[in-house]
Amino acid sequence: MAKKDIIGEVTALLNDYLKEHNLELYKVEYKKEGPEWVLRVYPDKPADAISEYVSIEECEALNRYLSDKLDETDIIDRSYNLEVSSPGLDRELIKDTDFIRFAGRQVEIKTYEQINGSKNLEGTLLGKDDNVISIKNDDGEVAIPAEKISKINLAVVFK
Image 1 (cartoon, one colour):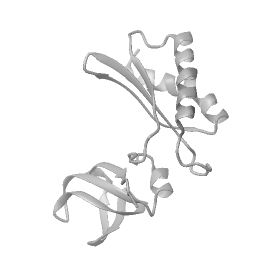
Image 2 (spheres, helix red, strand yellow; image 1 turned 90 degrees about the vertical axis):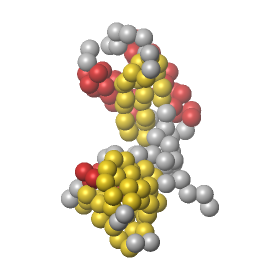
Image 3 (tube, helix red, strand yellow; image 1 turned 90 degrees about the horizontal axis):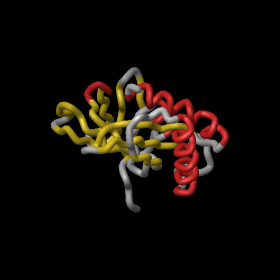
Image 4 (cartoon, one colour; image 1 turned 30 degrees about the vertical axis):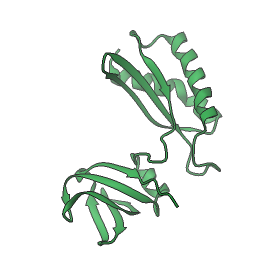
């Protein structure tokens, strides 16, 4: 089965479980790392959840559920490692809803080319509009076309 098909099948296997446990799917990865294949599943909390972060216990329960389902369905025809993990404090912003949910938070941005003299920018996320990400930092308001961004993550801020 092709890599894309496996990701789709895993996503389908998780739909009911995620709804039942008030979780949503952040991302699924299936890739070769060194000599081994890894299936990584990142559950997330919905934007309106009481807790912003997925607990270790929730990850463990999802891991057990998915491991059993994968054994039943046998959709992956090679050996692989299953990992279930929270997106983390420094999560990458992927979906359009991430830019709404985390507006007002500090972000770190890496770009393909220099913006205001740097490929690394930090600031307060203002939002995303028409494929332009806006932040506010010491340079004022900075608008960055999404296609120029290689990665945007929440910054881990220690107070």
